[in-house]
Image (cartoon, rainbow, N blue to C red; front, side, top):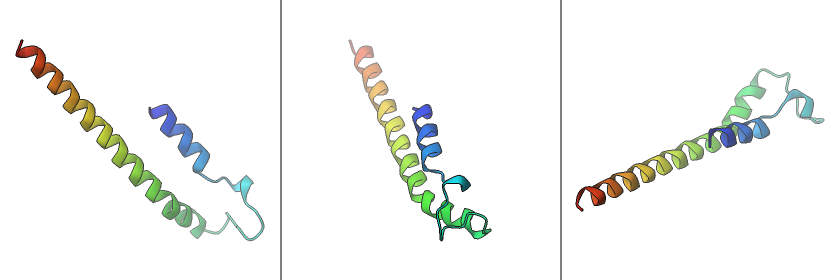
Length: 70
């Protein structure tokens, strides 16, 4: 799972070599603009991972509870 997130983040982060005309990556504010664009993706990713972990935890505890009741 973490490998997938790492790969996606590498694909999303823009590099200076991919800059086109009118898109200057040498400006100091360029990093902040890209972080502002990337922030919603990070927030959604953290939310989904948290939801998945909680689901797995609930599922495991219910399974353990069912096995204990037998």
